[in-house]
Image 1 (cartoon, rainbow, N blue to C red):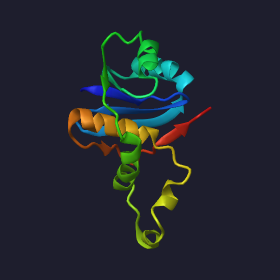
Image 2: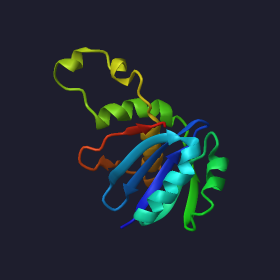
Image 3: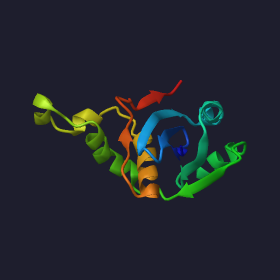
Image 4: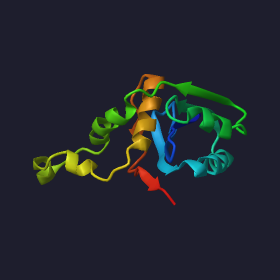
Length: 145
């Protein structure tokens, strides 16, 4: 198995995705405060066999990379241009609108949504040059405590 973590870095919050490359599946998708990222990744690598971490090259990517010094395997930086913008369209691919909701403007469904985890997914998909699917009914969780 080839599990990877992809991070969309930010000053106050980060999107993180745990994926299995061979299966093309996403197993975790979360948004968390930037100061919690180091602890979260440390806990994650104790339970998962992570082969690689991919970090978007945007805001605070250098600082995030330095925080992950303990990860002794490969850490890559990859282009993340326009991922936040593209996350809006990818959201509706992952969670299509059905039934009577199709008559409501799509923007309503994005109101108050943090799309950082979907941005992390797009970074992964761009890096691997393939689309990933969600493992069962995974929810893109927000954890901002």
